[in-house]
Length: 353
Image 1: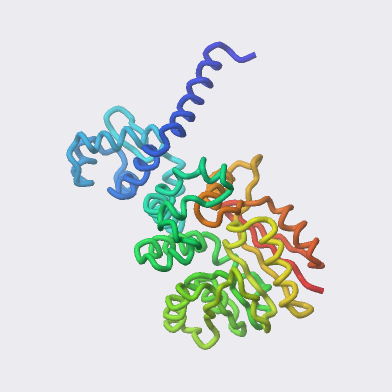
Image 2: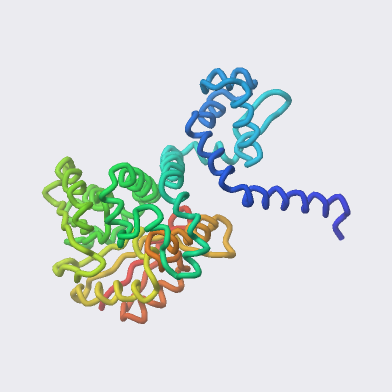
């Protein structure tokens, strides 16, 4: 039986957890400010600094530096021992990876610029079952989030940096998968700047890769492809991928960080259209994060799924792997492979007999 002191400790820990949520707007901006002022890098490189030393190093006066330090300490990102400050052990380990750090920095910028202002429409978006964050950001005539991103240079730059950083977390494992070496022509649907296509051609010297995305995006993709050493095996197609049929002639069609944007019915339609576009022996690849309410480390996919409702598409969600596999079987894919990745992501491969 838990002692009274244990019970009180659990209550206080949950109270702290609840307050981080209830004051989440401030929590997030404190977290972002730590990156903005270089606080986390400073304490990793020079642990044990005193307040005045921290303030001087990050170009703040002692009072605002103390506000920042105490704030991020409440988020368990830094800790104080006596009068000295240190990065928290777990956060410091996370930041050892440059790829992970770049994702967190770019993600914070994207949340600050775009997602945060739109998130206040969540309650109304849930009631209306519509992404009301879209007109909140871009006006009443806005019809497609990704088209609007392409028109806004600052927003598009933030989105591209964030998505590229997210993709890089597992890009080597995905691109190196033998399936891409077994195929001649890979189509990357909604591939944005074409980073995955570039990596596939690096790993598989006989494979051609084509990125297809909205016309407002594809010009930037073509510019990056021209700079690649494998440019002769890279191509870009501008198309309204939401309404037009997929092109034929590809033996592998990839959807990377794409299907969670859409409703279940639309995902099934993408899978069915892909099945129709593929010849016998072809395959579809789904590379996504997956929700799992009972698995540690899946909070990102549980929380961020709401973004698809109030902003990105008005109907999407991160689904569990068994759901995707069941839909693939329903469409007719004969064999399904599951390749787990870090950060609760996976590459699912469905083969057409």
